[in-house]
Length: 117
Image (cartoon, rainbow, N blue to C red; front, side):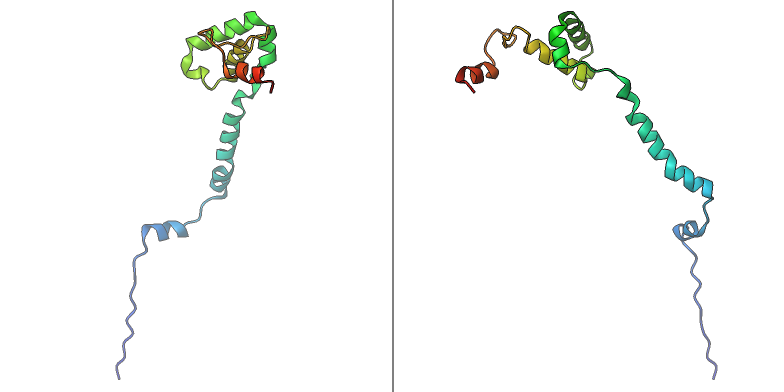
């Protein structure tokens, strides 16, 4: 009896060849540690800014007006800027307690205060 065993040899796919290759240790360290370090560097870039509070802008009207004019000159960046938001809030809630909008009408805060809540 002549029995022949046929063995099929399949060529490895590109992924299988890549999976079998050894990656040097320094490459693995770069892949593991460099992206988180870059992320942390970007995340902490804006932490050095000194953002003034609403109370600060209520007391310092000249700085508040300067910040508001600066924010009006850069409307694209002003929307997310905490300093611009705080200065605008201080403008709305000025130190004399009057809370009116630009047209001179009452705001919702005035109605809530008149109800005694």
